[in-house]
Image (cartoon, rainbow, N blue to C red; front, side, top):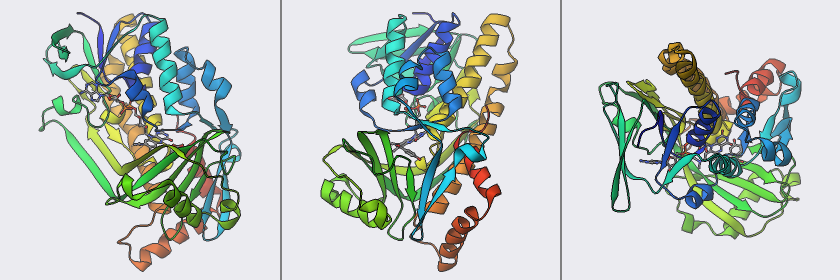
Length: 390
Ligand code: RFL
Ligand code: PHB
C-alpha cells in the first residue's frame, strides 16, 4: 500500500488530522490497534476550547457538537467552605468553553471518515516504523495472520502515551520530562441530572473532587484517590458517600445519585517528550505530552498540534513550502509547555498532597484566597482555561 501520510493511532488526534488532510486532497491511512467500539468506550475529556471547536467545523465534523454541546461561560471552585465562580466570559472578552464528550467527538470523526471513504484500519497489531530518517519511510503491521507494509512520505505518531511512535525515536535524540503525582482520579459516569449547571472543582481536606457533565441527563464526577486504591475498593455507594463529603453542603444536598455506567481510575502525570519530530516522523497529542486532567488541557493540547501539523503538511503538498514542517516541533512545544504549566498549577492548587508541609498547605489556601481577591489572577486563569491562541 502507498499513502502520503501514514497516521498511527485512531484517537481524536489521528482522526482529526486524517479528516482535515482529506479535505485538502492529501491521502492518509490511519492504523488503530483497537476496535472502534473499544476506542469509543473510553470515557475521557469533556471540555473543549473554541480553537478545537473551530477545527472540528473546518473538518466538517462540527454539526452535532454545535447542536448538542453546551457553551459554558464560567465554572465554580469550592474551597474553605466557599463557592467562588470564575467568570470566563467576563475575563476573556466574551470567550467560553464547550462541554462535549470526547466519545461523541470521536464518533463524529469516525463517521466523517467513513462517509468520505477514509481508510481507517482497526486491529492493526505490531505496528513498526522504518527508515524514518530516509526519504522513504514505511510502516509495517499485522492484521490477523496477514502482514502489511505502507510506504509513505511522512508518519504521524498520534498513538497516545503508550504508543509505539515515541519509542521509535532513538534514546539519545529524545529528551523526556516527567512528573508523576502521588494520586489518581476515580471517575464515575451516571445517567443522572448534574448537580450543577456549571462545573465545580472542589478542594477539600479529604482530597479533590470534580463535578462535571456530558449533558443535562448525564453526569461525570471524579474524586482524588490514593494510587494504591483499586476499582474493586469503590462500590457506587462508597463513591457517592465520599463525593458528598467533599462538596459544600448546599451542593451535596442537591446531588442526585444513581448506578454508575462507567467507573475508572486514571493516574495523574505530567510528561513532555522533545523534540516532536524525528526525520519524517511527527508526534502529536498524548504520544508526545500528557497533563493531569485538572485544567482540561489534554485533548486541547492535542488539537493545537494537529492545527500546526495540518497547516504544515498542507503547505508542503500544496505550495512546496516546508517552513511549517521545519518549525513544527518548536512551535508545538512552545504551546504544549504553557498547557503543562497551567495544568500543573491547577493540580497543585486544588489537590491534597499527602507529603505537604503545613507551610505548603497554607500557601495552597493563600493561592486560592489571592485568586479570588484579584481580577488579574482570575483573568490569567480564564485566558488559559479557554485556551491560548494557536
Ligand atoms: P489517544 O486518545 O490516547 O489515542 C491514541 C490512539 O492510538 C492507539 N494506539 C495504537 N494504534 C496502533 N498501534 C499502536 N502501537 C498503538 N498504540 C496506541 C490507541 O488505541 C488510541 O486509540 O490520544 P490522542 O488522540 O492524542 O488524544 C488525546 C486525548 O485522548 C487526551 O489528551 C484527553 O482525553 C485528556 N483528557 C482531557 N483533555 C481535555 O482537553 N479536556 C478534558 O476535560 C480532559 N479530561 C482527559 C480528561 C483524560 C482523562 N484520562 C482518562 C487520562 C479526563 C480523564 C479522566
Ligand atoms: C470531564 O468532564 O471529564 C472533565 C472536565 C474538566 C476537567 C477534567 C475532566 O478538568
